[in-house]
Length: 193
Image 1 (cartoon, helix red, strand yellow):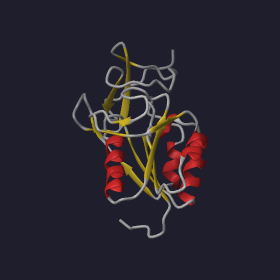
Image 2: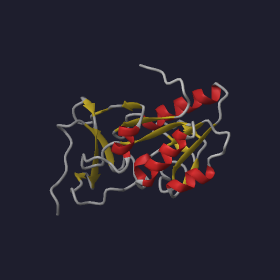
Image 3: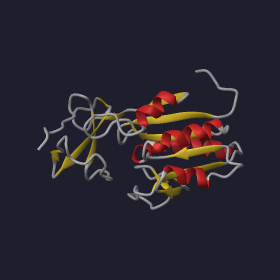
C-alpha cells in the first residue's frame, strides 16, 4: 500500500453489520491518540443504540464522540487544531456529508469514516458509494453469515423473524433484535407489499 505524504485524505471502513467497522475506526483513532495527534469523533444523533453520544461497537469498545444531527454541525464543531476526524454510521447522514468530508480533507485533516455500504435490501446505502469513490483508502470488511458460515457481505433485516420487504423504510436503527449478517446466497428480501 502506498502512503500519502501530504496531510488530508479520506479513508472509509465499510461492510455489513457485525463486521467490525466501528471497532476498526475506534482502533485507528486510539492509535492517533497514542501518537499524540488530536482527534475528534462524531456520530449521527439518531444512533442511540448503545450510547447517546459515544461511539460504541457491538463488542463494547467505545470512544468519546459528539452526536450531531446534520453534516454542517460537524464543520461547526471541528476545532482548528484537530488533525483527525472520525465519523461513524456515515450512512445515516444526508448527501451533504460528502462535501463536509471533502472540505475537511482539503483542510489537511485525515478523515476516517465508517458505515454500511448496502442497506437491508442489498442496495447502495446513502452517501457511502460516493464517499468510497472519493476516498484515498477503502477497507471493506466481512462478517460471518449466521446461516451458512460463509463470509457475509449483506445485512439481513428481520421483522418478527421474517425477511423485511423491499419497500419497508430504509432507515431503522437496531441491532441483533432486527439484523443479521448474511452472505449473498442466504440474504433474503421479500417482494414489495
